[in-house]
Image (cartoon, rainbow, N blue to C red; front, side):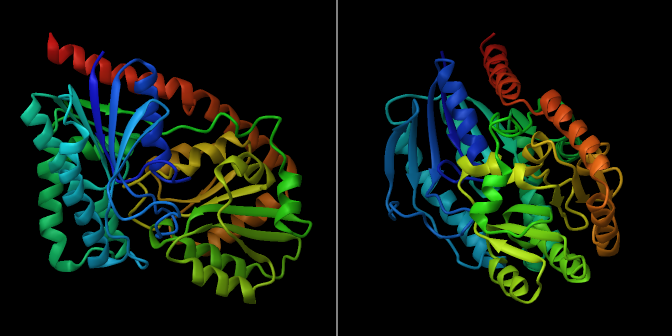
Length: 409
């Protein structure tokens, strides 16, 4: 069995985003008998606030068979522009310091970096080179282009960021990502398609089963009767949350339709303030991960906004669970993108930024229960076929083991 070191900013117990998937990889590899070490940050996402019980120093623990070293880093309350760069850079610096602690007693056979944060990827390549190990980069998010699309990256950093990204993508032995559109972009940036792997995120097995109880969740959240259009997750610019707020205002006269936003993030104050003045818009805090099946079962329609230009820079991980819940999805994405392809046949896709089209699509589904049911069945079937946790984790571990075997051959 191999020794494997994963370097990634986000990890458990973060309930959404990249953390649960890095945790899934680490624990699946450990379950296969590999010695797995993770160098990660202090949990802070999506609130952008350090979780209670985690201090500012280095912290070593063993969690579900994985040796986890958490390193301190800067967490900005308002993660925009330069502050976000400092956030990533501080993790990179302390991850480099932490590497000596994490691998002091064993040389890794493989070093896997997870992006974001791409700024920490040189830490992984240096360690792999020093130990003669396989280097692997898993891209959850093309953070440079996403930062440009959302205005988070300062103009002066654009050229450096683009050159750095291309350079790092070419240094790793293997590179993977989570969707076909992102795979095409990887091949373009690397200049070839050798050593590429599509390794998707997954739907939670507990979502969409008979144990889910949406009525219980509706009652616990104190929501009125009527059709629910739900968005749950990170509240930030990249998620395009503003279009949901605009659509709720425009559809305020539909008293039997309720927009529900459950989440945390930089835009939470804007969501709260808007909800206070729009009768059919309801804000609720992010629910615990164990409540996810009930929350998604509560929805009649799932909302998945993406800003223009971002749909092939990241495929939202929440999509897999939306489909698994057996509910139709209304997404904003341009034709030809991975997001549009994944939602087609399981909901309605409108062009990014088209608030009128979004409102019309929601109105159509809100008034047609039979169509919601048909699309929901198609969504559930697609999730079972393409987003199975067990199958995707088996694919991931097999790909890594095969790459290690080829390197040793």
